Length: 362
Ligand code: N2P
Image (cartoon, rainbow, N blue to C red; front, side, top):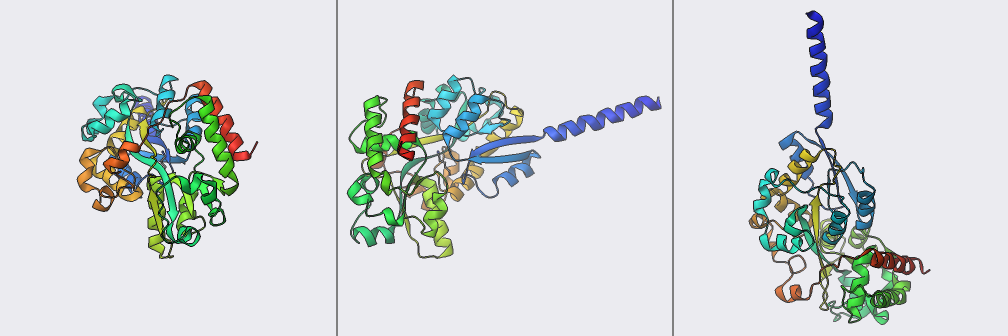
């Protein structure tokens, strides 16, 4: 009798130890992409402990997703990468019965995301934005004149102009599927083209301006812009605004602007998805549903300066953000935005070969 009770107790202890151990969710998100208190609030509300890792490159995330066994429960690929990874079997369909907050999402934006993920079967929008130009007003005025208005990709793709800025630091994202199309678009080519000759023309333009580019990196530029260590970055909308406000906070006199150039820019959606082998798929759904809470999403947008796809959150988003054309583009600017093309394997190989050449000069 006593022995049975002891055994039962041991089993109970073991079971709760396993439960405690399993009460976690492993999240892999972009750097500088969540509010300060989001994780804390999720843990307090659900008792689920979050392991939170960050990346700054779709290629890095994709390598992990295609290899499998990443251990992650929630990841945030951009929609074109999501589509290719879904096709490779990397994700599980969302169980929408566990995501009541899907009702908060903006139907038009979700329809936009569905171009890459039919019926939004595998993912929901986390944030969205554009890939444009961040710049330091004072440094540009000093080199190009007080009247120079930054509204064109000339700033980084016209050798006569970018060469005058090289000394104050020009950077670009290390994101070949975003930078090459911008160069192609500047040349008057279709930014969505998968034609090898078009991609090569974009790369050739990049090689011409390459001597004036200080670095290709996708997260370091936020601090560098804010500190005045660089003066121009081809970067992501919210990241540039984060730099702008960091500089304002420390009152270092650095004034930053963000522009969606007149020739147009890439608009992208970052999507929350659950890997097919996620160890804690239930908790992943709880996490995704929590993020889609209107107030939680509004808090994230208010902190990271990225637009979101959550219609219910809009009344809680700071009017300075909803009215900023760099974050929510005007209709005229929207008409010029393009969305990513999903590259087939051959194009993908071409692009990574060209990109290595652009970056290393070989
Ligand atoms: C956040 C970058 C997210 C945008 N730092 C990239 N899709």
